[in-house]
Image (cartoon, rainbow, N blue to C red):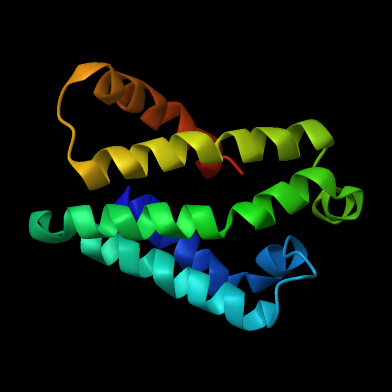
Length: 136
């Protein structure tokens, strides 16, 4: 997950146009929001490395995912954004759907569950979720 968040965070800095294109118009200072969300994601990546800060990083990821939900929802329902990015409505909906496993996995690590059905579900969801985002 550290590599995933680090990569996505870095993409905010080197390819901000993509993230600016999906930014809802009601979010003030979109350039700043893209920059800080990228820095936040890279922070998540760094804090995921040492075991003593992993739970903190998982909470950072969970909060970030909640905060960026309006962006993903906006993309899903905004035909103009889908057209700019070359996404179909189905692809935008799939992207929105995959935010749910990311939230579940972040929460799983944040609360430190190590057993049970929730752990099994998160473990199973991990690989298809990461593979989906890598292939974007």
